Image (cartoon, rainbow, N blue to C red; front, side, top):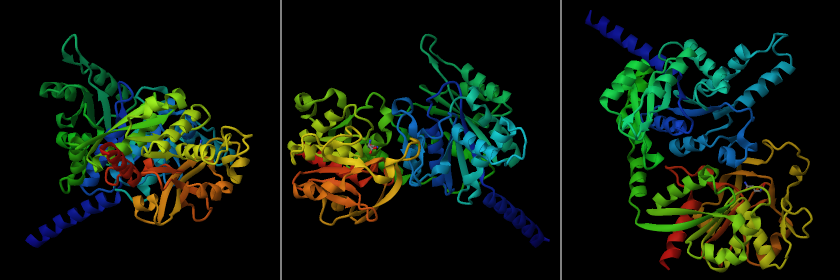
Length: 557
Ligand code: GLN
């Protein structure tokens, strides 16, 4: 009899395991009240905790704009365009996902309304809807639901977190919200939940935190048939127990599901704050999943400790033309945070507008810097300032790091001032230059469409031994992510190398030059790719780590 009972409980345990192992669980993150509340950081922090508990977790973002991807968006409007290994040009939130989780994302992790419509319209043109009237419901919503489950169905993940861009109640978010409603219904109980991120503003005049905007936003969600399972409340002040009780009662959630997300000194503290608030535990409970082990954040917390207790401090100039909007250089700024912690160094990044810099003002603007980074970019505006910056760094032995356009500027500067080719340029800036040291690759010449047509994604690079690049990477084969149309013109390779600008990294298949450096300079390196995309908390990028170390050394000299 006893055995029978044991068997039976084993059986139900087995069924439970079967269910929990085969059914990918879905968490949807929506936002209310205002934009810019940091849904991406909350999603990444939750994913981090679930990952640390032993769940294979990924995050994807669905954006409500009509652009097929953010590649054609001006950085001033949407911040940086992030690039994945598989060459997708994506929303910058994917950068946060990778930096937190240390797992690469892909094309499938970012979907826009534009991409959804494009694929539905292409299906319509191919006659796949068999003469049916194609409509938002069900055709667009079906396409969205299918894409929402793409990563889940791969079998690679236990939990998929989907961040819905925009704010609940927006006209353009409606098809996404309706898709979430349908999908949660289809997935069945405990397989899909909604976390709603809202703002609890503090009214200084009244000296009070206000819950009404949250109540309204939860109500808006309800009107679309979705009940929030968990509320994450962004706030500048602690939420009292009474206030949590009030929010729970009026928003129809359990009190434990009212999660406070108080302003933090750094985004990297948010996983710990969410752990303290129990966001991961409440989510697992709602999904009927076991808590497994307590999240092991030892490495993460070591990083945080080094970040908060620096022994050195350096000033690094970031010379670019999108400096007004911090988000334009998001991944670079984050890579400096990782590299700073690795060096126990506080890195002050000083934005310098390349348009307002020239040979005369260079000294004034650059002389106190411990390192200079010339940023990526497109088009001719501000490039002369970048070239003057490279010259100043080269002649004054200041650690220099050029990324993409920054590397191209270094090649132009060397050609002009060392080779003596006064009009050397990139054909992007001057098609008629007599010395096109940077030019378009053959494959790029006939391309007319701007979206998704650059050299994108991860490419191999072979590194020459006994070079700075080799010392930095400690290996001879690397993969780095690209996003550009123009290239180092191989016709000038011999001449430049003889004059002292060494090509230390070359694509083994195409022979395109990917890294240049000056061996006689303390630290001068330019890379055609974007190392910043691959820097994570767990793996700070070696180029940034070495650059910061060189800046520390320069300062102490
Ligand atoms: N505008 C340059 C090119 O297209 C550099 C691009 C970049 O810096 N990402 O090649």
